[in-house]
Structure formats: structure tokens, C-alpha cells
Length: 523
Image (cartoon, rainbow, N blue to C red; front, side, top):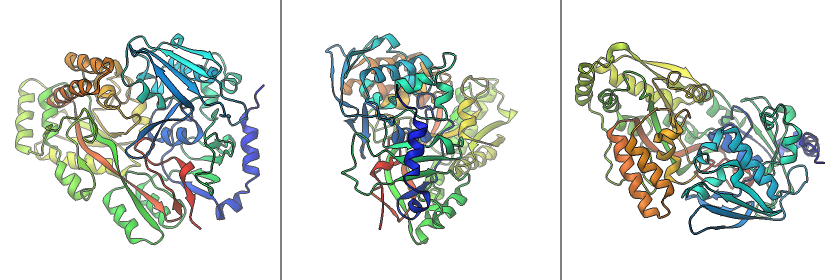
């Protein structure tokens, strides 16, 4: 019988008095928190921070450029037809309650995800059924795919491995433990959740797990306590960093806040090349956005150069399509749209002549906590206003926006977000953004539909040769851009404010530098 972890966390925290750790080895992370704590349900950047610290996966991305390394797995084999994947597990992994990880935990984790059909399940549902995951023995897991799926290994780090016995002991009414896990944990990661202090989207406290399988020899002075307290507004968040109230900000800082940090003592900005595309989504299923000429009108009304070079100080790099320009599968010659109000007006007139309700006024929803989304909306509002199109800016939150994208009717006219690196493959971007298979997810919230694009993206998944896959993705990118499915703005250079106390900060595009196990405090 496994012990539930609440007592384990309480003991860990009790052994490290808070007053002492504030002075010694405690940090406060001021970034956004996920809407809930179940890693099989929530699928976004805030969850990456939580998941990478509390859970482990079979493989993990390390460093920048991100390298895929065995983590819980010691190795794998794949059949010649690409449909059978067999993973061997490391034999020294403990969960937070002290029990050993076995193949049954891995099988349960994948079957749970596939049955829930939420979070990162979309990457696997087309190719993997629950019964296709089986334990060969205590330390070996076999996956039998319904068809070849080239991104399979790249996508494996999406799936947190759960302590089967703990989750099952807390399941109710066939929910796979979903209600319980939304505010508790069942992992083996480098840090342990304190469920007693958890407040949804307001507070997460973590304590070091000294028995983590990776050990701590690489970091003899690791962080003992992590307190994650998001600060709602950008300038307030930066002020808290400068005043020493938090040790890290979010990684979406606008230029004025970067300059503010640069002028202050005891803080710095970590600048890292990433793969995270800023995009303004357009609901292609809702008039007037169902008219390609109107979408081209809007695409030409955004001042890309002014936004990137003036407002953002030239830190990001223009990205004309859905795939990051520093990833294979992105066409080198993709020009995209430029800021041209004459062209915008011409396309708007064409849309109007075709019966599109151009003059009804449209909305763009922004993330109030992230100032860049407001700035981008204001740039587009000015451009559209100059050609007589009324754009209303609607404040919202990430949680509200992602929960609204389940149907075309509830999805906003437009909304702004970034598509970050959840796994390193074009499938993470164009594959899940524009294949109709993924309609109803936040990633596919433009409700774009093109039969040829579907065909190309599905062919790319089944093709083992990267060079051939790249050709499919490049053709699909050109078609999606020609259809003006969305407005793609830039590929991120990540900018995160950090206290000078932070040492060993290790950035990877997967997780955005939020993996705490590498960090220590300067003396």
C-alpha cells in the first residue's frame, strides 16, 4: 500500500523551516501558474513549469538547442515499420512516496491520458489506442501504434508519468483521479508539491525531493523551497523583482520593462534564443473572417516592423509563417505579409463586394497579464482604424481564452498568444495548428480547413525521412500563409527578469528555463 504524499510533503517542509530557507535556499518564481495541476488535463506553458519540476517523463529535452535525452527510460528500440516502440526503464526511480516506478506506472499514465482525451492527448490519439500500451515486464513498456508516426519519440516528453497506486486510490466515479489530481500530485520529479498551501492560479509551494533518481551531484547547493506566486500585471511584476520580492518574472517582457531592469541593481535579464511564435488567431469559421480577402486585409493592416523594431526594441525576429524560422520545415523564402494599408483597403473592398460583413466591427481578445498582447492589439487597431474597420480590444485571461476555443461559435473573432515549444518537431506548430483533426483545441483555434493541408500534414506524420517530411511541411506552410489563416508576427528571443541571486539558470525552449533543479543561490 503506497502512502499518500500529503504527509511526505508536510514532513519535507517541516524539516526545512521557512524562516531559514528565506535566508538560505528559497526562491519566489513570479510567473503564471496553470489553471489546474493535472498534467494530463492542462496543456500550456504554465503547466510545463509545474510538470518539469514535479513530474518526470520517459525522455526529456535538455539545453538550447534542445537535445532529447533518456530520462526515466534507459533506452528504446523501434521496429523497421515504425509502429512498435519498446522502452526500457531505469531501475532506480522512486516516486515521492518512496515506492518504485515500474512499467505499470508508465502504462497507466499513457492509458489515462488517452482515455481522458485532454491536454497533450491530441498528439497521440490519431495513432495510439489505450490497449496499444503494454508492460512487457516490470521494467519494459511497449507501444504499438496504429500507423507510423514520425514525431512519436519527439512527443513522448509531453506525458508525465504518474504514480498509479496513488492516483487510483483517489479516483472517484470513474474520473481517473482527475478531481483529486487537479490540486494534488503523484510524481517522481525533483520537487514535491505542498497541497496544503495550494491556491489555484495564485500559489504553488514546492519542496526539494532529495531522493530524485538523477541525484544532486551536479548541483550541490540546490534550491530547497520554491514558491510560485504570479503577479498579475507586468510593471508590478518587474517592480517586485527589483524590490527583491520575487526572483524571476515571466518571459514575455516588453522593451520598457527590459530597460527598467537593466537600470536597476541586483537584477538582470536572461536573453535566450527560443522557438516560440507570436500569433494573432483569426476565427476562419466566423464572418467576416471566413472570407480570405478580409483575412488578407487584416494581415496587411498590422505594422510588423513598427511592433518588432520600435515597441519591442528589435529583440524578436520576424516570423512569416507558423513554424519557427530556426526549425527545419520552415521555408527559407516565405515572405509572408507586410504592412501595407493600400493593400489592406483593397482586400477589404474585395471582401465587402463578396458580401462579407466587413463593417460589423470585430473583437480581439488579449491576455491582460501580458502587456505585449495589449501592445500588439493596439497596433492592429490603429492599422484597421485607418482603413475604416472598427476593432474592439477585449481584456481576458489565458484560462478564459483557452476554455472558449472548444467550438467555433465560442471562439473569439481574434485572440493573441504564443505557440511555444512543447516538443521539437513541426508537428508541434503547423501540424497541430492547421490540421482539422485538432479542431476544438486552443492550438487549432483558427478553425482553418484545407483538404490539401490536411493531406500534407498527415503524410508528414507517417513519413520516416526528415528531408521528405520537411518538403511536406514547407508546402503546407505556403498554403496556410496564402490563405492568411492567422497573423504570424515573430519568433521569440526569450527575455526573463532574474535576481542576481540566481545561479545555474539553464534555458531550454521546452519549459522556457523554468526547470528549477539546475538552479542555486549565489552566496
